[in-house]
Image 1 (cartoon, rainbow, N blue to C red):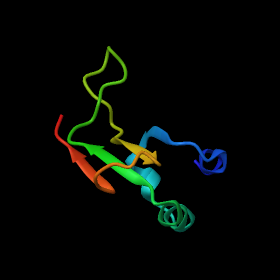
Image 2 (cartoon, rainbow, N blue to C red):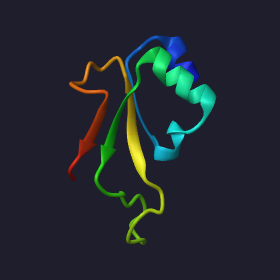
Image 3 (tube, rainbow, N blue to C red):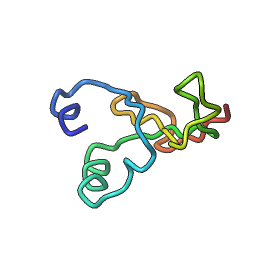
Image 4 (cartoon, helix red, strand yellow):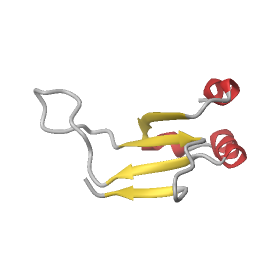
Length: 74
């Protein structure tokens, strides 16, 4: 994500929600004003399985969303 900020272009990355953790990341998110979209359920990325054990969220930058934290009902 650091490299994405260096490129200075809007982005949207689908990442594990645990990407929010960590002191350095927290400082980076605050500095760059990252916005996060959190879906109400986990998505299945593999057809053979019923669901993913991994909760994902969209981490965005420079997309000018209406709020910094958006909970999406899906």
